[in-house]
Image (tube, rainbow, N blue to C red; front, side):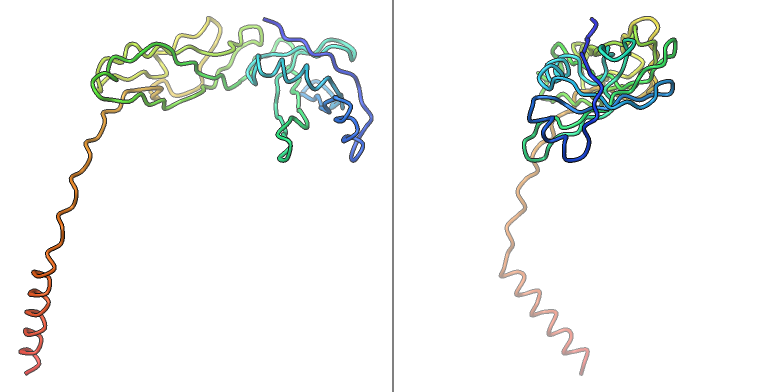
Length: 212
């Protein structure tokens, strides 16, 4: 699925950006190895809608300024006060070149080992992949129904990825497993204050004998 965003070149900088945001526009910058840095703006609501659906691992197409440009969301800055997007960095992809991106893992299914009293542990939530932009998966599905016992685990090498997609993580790295629930330790025995007093008194008497 192709996600397209309409952008326009901007000249606003510094304090003028507040007025731009107040008008519903989002300041951004586009740059890359073969793309000269360019300041742009786009509709804030349109970006939020596309970003919520596409995420950081999907290729977006910027349209409206010269030739359409394929980009990845490189960085998103949020307002600490209003919790809204304040600025976006777009990384322009070099045509014909592969990209290396972190792709989120989507866990599905039920692990039978959980019924044995365990809990599902997700050791990884995303993996790094390298591929052509057109091959870039939006997410990678992890089916945990193969976790039948506490000894079972899903490794990076067990993941299914589309043809043309290379996983950069260590093949033996653990993705998920079911951890056995630890039994609650018994409550510590109550202290016998009388025994402590007797021991303390005996120690004092022993020290007195030594001093003599």
